[in-house]
Image (cartoon, rainbow, N blue to C red; front, side):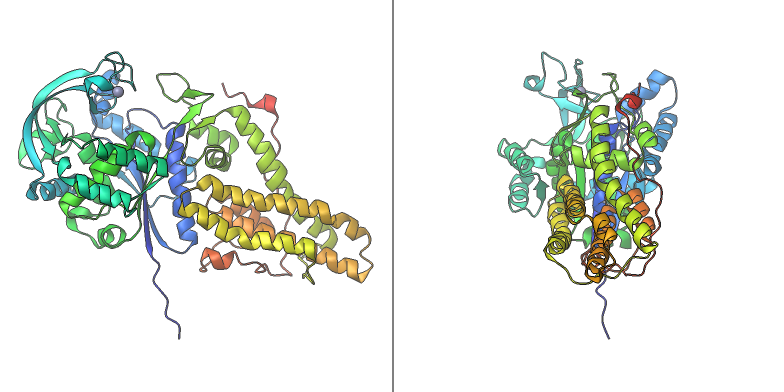
Length: 530
Ligand SMILES: [Zn+2]
């Protein structure tokens, strides 16, 4: 009798975007990165919970609604729906979507977190005056401004003076440093880890965690015991990562995916590092809650070399791109052409080049020539391989390394490297075809030795594509399914990925079915979007 080890939990979140504008390509990048991690850990048969949602209690939303002449709730309802709809347009697999303005579990979770920090003596009141950028939802010191303007928004910050609650961040300096230096809280990439350690060395000042009800226009989560103040956006927004799991009433779900889970990962952008790597773990330490274990930080996507922003007029709509080319084409571009932890540029020219070179010429071609030859030479029935020669062994070795290469990369959140490993195998398989020339073997197959070579070669190619399909399921799910369909295999399995990616599991005698071309070539001239 065998005992089954229960699957290990694995929790991943995106940051929750403001909903004062429509989703742009930077949101798509982060959603897709987190989605790949979630899908990958599901393939490893771990018990994944993937959370995303929307940050709705910000003053930005109040002002955006005022400009449109509608209620704040109407604005956030409408815009949150657009973010939730990315699930279909980008083929995301999140398990939960939290909305901070309407989900009762969120407000009660934030209030519980506040009370826990308060009971620990870490919340106090003091008068505050500062220069505040509403766009950033952040106070700026004079020396952080660019010619008196917010460096992000290039607008003059407002002078704000009021009595606020503060969080005693300074008290957590040593514990934060220790957590981060030891990688108990692992910050990826290492350059960002060093940046955070630099912030800590520079000294951590207590930060404001409330604002007056008046300044908030009555919008936001009330401070427990003080109806005149609402929680300030970061204390509120960061709380979503545990409030969504049922922290407020200590649900089994919260126990499973946070309190007793060794993998608590956040995927965020480089502009919000300080809040996630310093404020958030300090708040949790204060409340007696475990901090996250991993913070994976991506860069920014520029479009044609310029920063993405509605105000700059180059916001490119990820929904339109996915609708036009397919979600997997956009996913491929964002995962492969944008370095996982660095900045990258989006351009339609590059998209079409990557599509034609990698998706059409490499992957699409390998599938169609393999299934085509099996249809032609074996009536669609995959032959049994016989003995392997040196050329075969090189391909087999590359196939057998696929799991280790992907797993090593994804352990470091190097999504581009992991996806690249699949394309390396595809390239090796295409070279193998050129080297072995199955069509030449087919002409001389009356010779039994040649016939055995032909059978072995085509089996090896199908088996390579089986590995590719299973591995791609984490990155390009629709493409993986389309390949599996042509190969006559199912992708769902109770086996963990390292078993599934063992060479030789394709069953000879299975019938393949030549389907539509995966990625028909694109003409450069046909792609003008605007
Ligand atoms: Zn700003």
